[in-house]
Length: 227
Image (tube, rainbow, N blue to C red; front, side):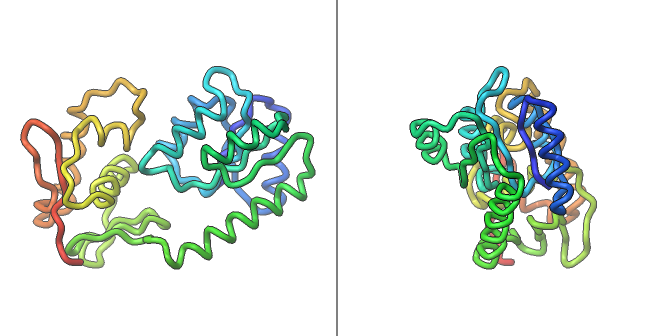
């Protein structure tokens, strides 16, 4: 699934059509704020990002993605009318993977997307796709949580919260930090929401739920256990 962040609806729908013809599913967002919302709800393989957006611009959105624990590794291609060298340099300094200037050839864009996704798949062999602790395992690519080989049903937010804990095993994490990792640092959600989700995760993990420890007055940590 590709995320297209483009406020020009005609161009966005043209991109969506060309991506569909090339075999890709896509999701459209006209603003950076809505894109952050979508990133918190769905899993994306790549982001096509315009710079000139209403409200938060593409550079700031790119910065937020690269700073986010759960989204930071998603490939980003900037697709923009801003072709000046300074814009390209800033984009690459922020961590984009490619830069395409409008107007562009749909065929060329598809080839660039394919090259980046192929590179990511090659890297997948060395990247950690399975996070585990004891009998608990999380398959990042397939979004599956299992306990001793038995698949469990987790909501998206429960999944993201467990991933955040597993990625920093043994480290105490504040409720605020977990909230910004899993939901969005800009959202006004009570930190007690974390407690509710932790309780549900523990219940689903049964006895293994004890690997998630409460750090009184601060937050939570996931104990190191041999997988």
